[in-house]
Image (cartoon, rainbow, N blue to C red):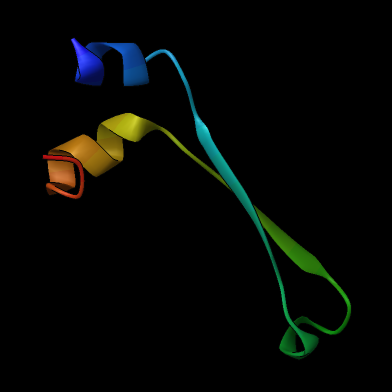
Length: 41
């Protein structure tokens, strides 16, 4: 049930670093990827 609930959401994080020259990376990932890779048991 927990995993099924997660599938209705997305994970988003914003990464900034001086190496990016003042820019940022906005990363959006489906929880399905984490479940399939085993990061969410």
